[in-house]
Each structure stands twice: as structure tokens, then as C-alpha cells.
Image (cartoon, rainbow over all chains, first blue to last red; front, side, top):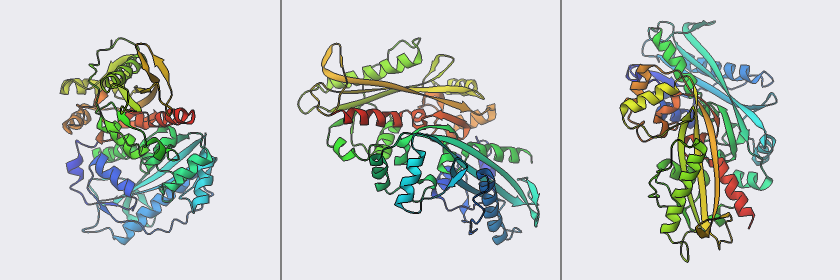
Length: 220
Length: 220
């Protein structure tokens, strides 16, 4: 939905503060956005006992601010920094990437035949002097404007058997994915249905991002 | 979910009776199935005033039977033929590929800010002598076994403006897609949410297919 403004958007210097190949693919292939990838080095030390929404919003914010600080917003610095953090949750517990095979097995068996949620927090940071992008001032970062949002998508997983889970873990695609499955890969077949934005389950709330960016852009 | 039986499944001769590049990709990348593509030449002349579910089930069945008849099920013939037909529906009206730019524009504006459904009928045909795949006998095709199912997924489209729709049509991805948008391409960003199987919106109900095939296979 950004096609009418994409060339204008792409004349800005945009940074994706995430090393996730899936986020890169979504922004390149489904939006046509041009950006540089500069992953955040923020340690992700936010308290996991927080409500999942607060956890991802705060983690995404800290990721974006770390990159913003490093790139010293000023002349030649980015016009827009995009960061995101995604977790899988069930019964208010946060599931990230599995530690090992056993952890992946336990996660998947816990999701079996039930719904879980995928929640992504997104932060957009730009210089306070920007004439293109808007946002709110951040305490301690008076030269930056910040926009924050989050999106949750429910996922209904099929009823799994130990045989299905073990054969799936053998594919090797579990370990680098929050929740232990890849909805965009072989894991697609164990997902009965999605209730919300599919791309959010991949790690980036595509529609909401485009809507927010269009709104920010139209405010100029 | 077919990983535990995939090598055994792939020792059979499987035919996909559809020329859709999206169905081919789904079965290859998300299932790992090996098959030959032999598109059906069935004319798709089923009455469009039928309820959409009946329409896609009957079209998929005729597509599969046309290919089955052509390949003369017997020695050296396929062990399994897979066919599918997808339509987009709203208020019981069927929307297929847009005829021209104006048709694409009208379809998208009609979907704007509302839900529509994507419905796919799938037919699996195999020889009646099969020891691997099962199904019901078809009248007039006594040497074949048939399994039929369908899947519906609701799609909530964002509120569109003429500017967004025109810029989207300019991308050129509308014309070869039922409903005039590609959920797996740039069209992804105009979709607020999906309620059911995402891959069904792309044209093939991946999870249901795997579940049905596993059931058929486990009956051996």
C-alpha cells in the first residue's frame, strides 16, 4: 500500500536495525523499500516476566535507540531507523528461540492442538529535525522522534504426534526461530490457521507498518 | 507434517494437474513433494451461480478426471493426481482473475475495508488398484479412487483509496490472480488479516492437504 509514495520514501536514508533475514525479505519484496541493514547490539536484557506486549515494545525501542545513538543522528545520519522484536507467547509465558532439540520438542508439543500468539513490537526513530517523518520526543534523546506500535497474531497449531515433531526437528529449521517453527518454511504445514497478519508470524507486521508509515508520511 | 513419510511418498509417481506456479512452489518448498506438472485442459465451464464451495469442488474434480483420463490410469500411469481450483467470493458472488484494469479496480474497491473469502476445492485421484492411496469410486471412472475436500479462508482487506489501488495495479501483479491481488507479493501489504490457512489464499490449502494425505497414507 506504499506504492504511490515508494520512490519518494526511498530517497531517504533508511536503516533496518535488525539482522533477521525474514524482516529484510519482507521489507524488500513486499514493500520495495530500500534500506541498509545495521543490526542492533542491544543485549535484550528486558525482564521476561513483563507482559509480552510491554516486553517486545521495550526491546524494539532499546534496539532502535542503540543504533540511533551509534549512528549519532546529525548530518549524513539516517532519516529513519526501523527496529522490531518478536516473541511467541502462550498463557502469558514468552517463548524465544529454542536452546536445544529438547527445548524445541517441548515448545512444539506445548503448542500442539492449541492457539498461541505471536507478538511483534516495532519502533521507528528519526531525527527531530526531520521534515518527512514525525513522532514523539524521547527522554534523554531530545534530538530524536519515536513512533511505537505492536501487533499480535493468533496461530492455531495442528495436533502433533512425537513422530511428526521429531521428523520436523530433523529438518533443522527450528533452532533459529522464536517458538521453534518457521511458518514460511516446512513449519507451514503444521499450522492449521492464522488469525491476523501472516507476516507478523514471520517476524514483521507488514500491513501495520505500511499503514503507520503512510500516516507519518502524509502528515508532512 | 509429512516429513516422517515423505521419502516413502516420493517413491510414487505423483502428478500436479495445475499450471499454477504458486501451487507448485507450495508443494515443493513447504512439503518437499516430488511431482510432475501436467496442467488440466478442462474448460472450467461449471455454472458460476452455484454456491462457491460446490463450484470449486466440481471444477477441481473435473480437472483431475480430465488428466486421469488422458494419462489412462494403468501400468506406468500416476499413483496420485492432485488438482485444485480457487475462487475469491463475497456475498456469494464468485470473483476470478480480472478481465482488465477496470475489472481489477472494481474488485479491489469492492473488497476495501471488508472481509471476503478464498475457497479452494482439492481433488486427489489414484488408481482403484492402489495399495498406497485410498478414496471413493467415481461413477463412470470405475478404475479410479477419488478424495475431495475444500477449505475456506477469510481475508480482511484494509480500507483502500483510489490512489493506493491505482499504484497497486501499476505493479502489474493483479491480472493473473483470482480477486486481483497477490497475498504473497506486494498485495500482502493491503491485507489487514487472514482468518484460516494463509496458503489457501495463495491457492492451495497446505495444512489440510498434508492432513488428508497423511490419513490416506496411514490407512494402507
